[in-house]
Amino acid sequence: MYPRVANAAYRQANAAVAPTVALVRVYDELIVAMTQAVRAMEEGKHETCFARIQRVTTILRGLDCALDFDRGGEIAERLHKVYNSYILQLHISYTKPDRVARYRRLMDGLRSLREAWVQVALEMRGG
Image (cartoon, rainbow, N blue to C red):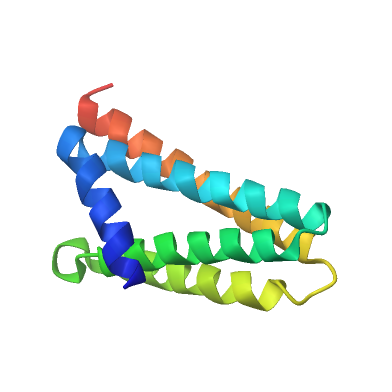
């Protein structure tokens, strides 16, 4: 069910803008949800944190399900590994005493991926 929700959101965003721009927006949502999870954990709101981590996981699963391995080749394979690694680390980190620092590192990685897609979007637009 989760991947369908994320795929539907991606398709809706994709209908109005270029696919790379839609993807950047999806990454924006990932970063917002991670930021909210970190804030909730710092405030001791464990249920809210867990809900936000579930949101991130859902989006990552949707991104993973949307990969086209035939057309994407090695890049799709790498993204598949990255998305699944993030999902695993999100849940492993939840029980660790340094989970906030771990979540911040994961968020930094998501920001780097987002910036890479911004560059792709700009190049595809011609500037």
